[in-house]
Length: 322
Ligand code: SF4
Image (cartoon, rainbow, N blue to C red; front, side):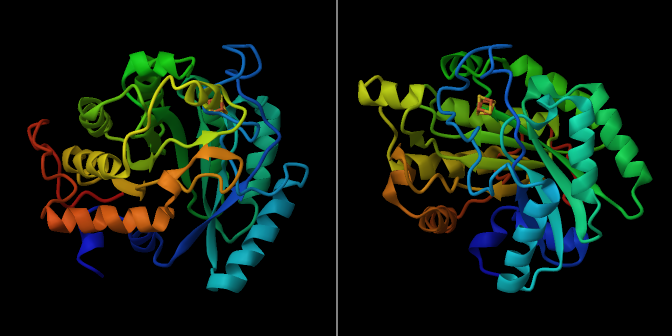
């Protein structure tokens, strides 16, 4: 293992330790919607959300869950000799589906014995006890251990910015969702965009501190990408905001990691972004190169995840296992 990747808690390593082998995530695209798009909470959704419901690299949602899993599984098997997988319900707000439909899809997703877990993307204000009870029953009835991971889009803890990006919820709903999910012992992953134009370095630090204080398990960091024909794209074209530089983004990721509980596993340091139909994506730089630059910066500064995690009385265990 290289020096760089030991400076933060790497997801692939964590999965290998947890399951005893490499695990691959298989995206599943369901024909869903989102209360922030259909008028229930708001119209048009988050200002960066496109027609794909913030999910891409998926197969068409006209294919069944089984068809999508089978096709993606075959790809990973051939390319990486993969054997075990997690089903990843990625697009839109999956727990906004009617309960019976959600149950049908989830049951189909975990029926394959090669599936060792399921990851479900949703909004903090859309994860009620009804859905969590259903997941608990599914887990209890499952013939083999099943990891259940709820992926909550938050993007920032700054509730002023949450309003600005039209999330349709504040920080309070996120805190409530984390507390509710924790009652079931399911794992929680949180998505954060570290370069929202209305956030600064103080918000970066507060993002890390609040996720640590709440004891979430995984983080996915993204840079903001601007997809054509979104509200964000209009604002960008009218010069209503500017995007921070790549150097500043790297600085924010490093700072975020320094303040983050060293037990939290990092699923991503930068998003992959849609390859086309965008006005801005990752400073026209490959996500892989940005990742390497972040890792290099950690080495140059001789810093690491958790270096500044001293604000909760250090009540963590270095041996914490997930
Ligand atoms: S919560 Fe997700 S699907 Fe809904 S509007 Fe926002 S980005 Fe789009």
